[in-house]
Amino acid sequence: MEQTELVFIPFPIIGHLASALEIAKLITQRDPRFSITIIIMKFPFESIDGMDTDSESIRFVTLPPVEVSSSTTPSGSFLSELLKAHIPIVRDAIHELTRSNSVRLAGFVIDMFCTHMIDVADEFGVPSYLFFTSSAAFLGFLFHLQFLHDYEGLDFNEFKDSDAELDVPSFEISVPGKVFPSRMFDKENGGAEMLLYFTRRFREVKGILVNTFIELESHAVRSLSGSTVPEVYPVGPILNTRMGSGGCQQDASAIMSWLDDQPPSSVVFLCFGSRGSFGADQIKEIAYGLEQSGHRFLWSLRQPPSKGRMDFPSDYESIEEVLPEGFLHRTARIGKVIGWAPQVAVLSHSAVGGFVSHCGWNSLLESVWYGVPVATWPIYAEQQINAFQMVKDLELAIEIKIDYNEDSDYVVSAHEIENGLRNLMNINSEVRQKKKEMQKISRRVMIDGGSSHFSLGHFIEDMVANIPCKQQRRGDT
Image 1 (cartoon, rainbow, N blue to C red):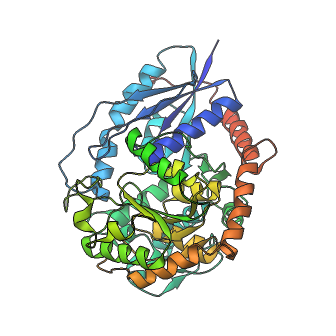
Image 2: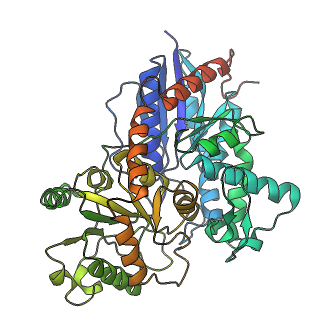
Image 3: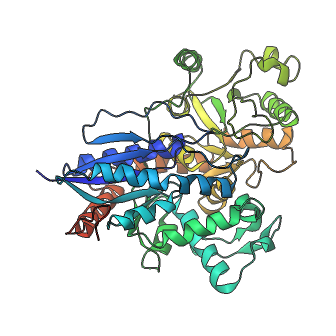
């Protein structure tokens, strides 16, 4: 019996890999004709643990590491070179996969950062699809900015550190330059050109799976419908509610045990993602803000990597050294400072009533799924524009900051943090009520009759229709 195979090429960081695995599961569950091979690349600054599945229709192929000219920071040019260096290895892996005549290659599903691999799909004569792991609004933002740059000569630097605003079709209100991704202004390391290159290549794919749902981003999804971009399929929220991310089970048990002892919806959870960390001055302001607010808290505090090193934050050996003197003693009855946090498990706990987040899209979707209000504190990547969307465009979050980024010397004051926490934990706030409503909707869209369930079915139908009748093999002439 001929086997119909899809190849997934996710970006090799845990948030992207986990989402790719979840969408792969959904596809194979909906249509048993499909098997999926997930290609795992190895990057020098990311350790991948816990990638596993009990599905017989999904398998992983882990590629050997590749070497490119050394760099200490994950700049745009370095990442681009690293991805290009994987092309021949990916090509060989697909050739091995299709060696059997019983395998019919349906296409590639490529991560938003892996668009170099479209060339490999073209070599095998199969279509490419994009899996966009951020919001539909940000997807529209990228398309619009790339068009303005390429065809109308827009200079991104007009918006650097500026209050200037830009009308973007995927947002209901104008977007200020201060929330544009900092990469857009990074000409030295190739960040701007990298984003432009990715976005130009987005236009080459057959369709775009977006980790969102129509009811959350109705305006953004409508703005992309019928436009000059490939068809968009909102199939989210795609969440990994089981996988850990390298933490210690003993630590997780202690954290959950502490939460079990707290009253319902009483705890503020502070967690800033896999790359989120702060300097000494900012840590002290967070501590004072927490203490002055009087709210119960669970704070995931990570140690920054050595300056200029391509690495991720780690746990402190002695957390007392970076906190104000006596802070742990004074807050012992209401707070707990930890290192790594099992974020999904914490957000799902009934004691958690608010989430101070870096506004990574996965984290925002998790907050919607569990109905936990968010206070925004973006740090890197597209998180500033995510924060802007949630606070200003959708009115689903509270602002601590929307334009903070890791390259800034700005220190958010204890007063700003205290005010943000008080607003976040207001049990009668409109944001809290809207979040609870959106939680109910997010559960409905994934089941039969829901908008995302329908959209995934539509994608599968279109994908089947696009499968080439004659399969090309590597070396065919």
